[in-house]
Image (tube, rainbow, N blue to C red):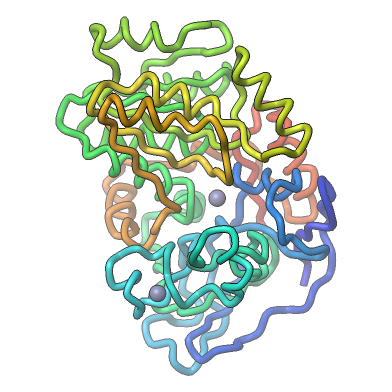
Length: 389
Ligand SMILES: [Zn+2]
Ligand SMILES: [Zn+2]
């Protein structure tokens, strides 16, 4: 089959790779109907994530159709349309039983690669390096999904492929980010980042009762989506040297009740701290730039919540003193999409949530390298490129 392979830093190629097959009795094979770029893939492209190997198939946000089921699969039928949360769970371990699906103890086949980085392995995720399981990803004609009964969610009638696609990753990540804020009716929530995840965090905050949502970014086309599609207030940080002051003014001097950081380690910023990060990153002293995180920590009100859904490795200048002295609760995780899937599907069915507007570019899989170029350079207003294999 054809698949998008990581062939080295900034080198993606569509190549022939072996078809997946049923390896365990609880597996299914999906024909991938739609699969999309995710901001965290850029960390793979740039070489910031160790343990990538030449030829690895990338992609972890996808939906498809069941074409083959293992003998122990009971809930799925050939022909069914399904969406799959990015991190796989097993449904049986302590973490899955506690609804912490992305932390599953059983879906990481190579824990020895994750333990030195994290202490304990997380669950596995396809297409995202050997440190996260080494499974072939979704930018391919077919994908094998393990523990399919608990990871594949049938897409109900009335929910389109393009809507279901983003329930795999962008929506649950944003939804979790808002859930972490324990929003009280009328709360003010500020969200750094108007990419797919940031926009979904903004919409989720509204669905959970936020009175005001303030979106912060620097790209006019993304700010326009936050303003026009979501209905958020917006701050353009490229034209506003003092986001902190603007947020203070907008909130009567108190600051947002919760801040969601949906930018992660590719964060752009300005000022000396940012320059310092860039220099350190260029020298490979560390791989992350955390200016959005630090700004969100400063901006959040005392005893508020800082919810971090951007992807991080190791950062220095972590503002622990700011959080400690202000009594801020910090919450962060990789999304357990299985926890949120029933609620997300209901929102889509009721017409309260339609993530399909995130798609700015549709193309066949053969054009995926070009799609990633556009996505990475935010060319032509590219928010998400979606591939139909
Ligand atoms: Zn992702
Ligand atoms: Zn598990």
